[in-house]
Length: 216
Picture 1: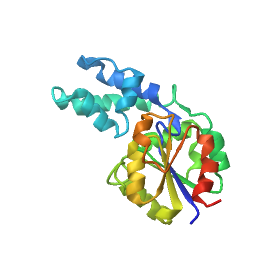
Picture 2: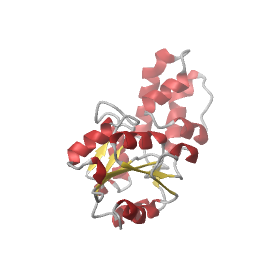
Picture 3: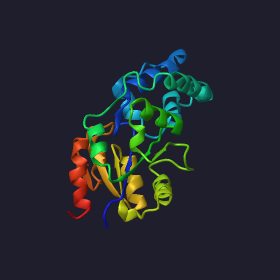
Picture 4: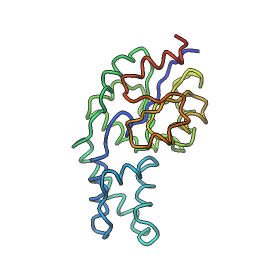
């Protein structure tokens, strides 16, 4: 059965947001004597959502400050969403080429931030739905957001594919029964993407690779 719906991850897949997330995290943890994060350090932590990320940074010793640090992060990040964030090479062109497909975003970033980031970059109109960590009851790697998106769009699992840069995307997709495409250029090491049906090195490869799923 041919693919009707393409679900995209956001950070590390459509956009490189690593610098802006790093800057916001360093602002958030600044008063607490924690070592400043590098971009590489941030990339190694992102994926499960900012609440989980900040919990990891603070550890048990400063866990009581979690809500304050989270607010500091959100206050700063919401004002600096796209200072340095840009679409990855080929993303905009690929979305243009995929005009006949229904397209959605499922991110572990909060919904309002995900939507505003895509709006600021002029990408939001490509997507029928933009969902974040607070759109449904569970986050990736749970299959729940993918399954709920299938219901929302009204297509079967065999008619959908998820595209992402992390094992969370692949695990969520496989558990939901949809085909999976991993991008090698994102935030996760390629060794974590081996369970994907297809791995691509540039988003421009996606249209031709979808033909494999469509039996062309």
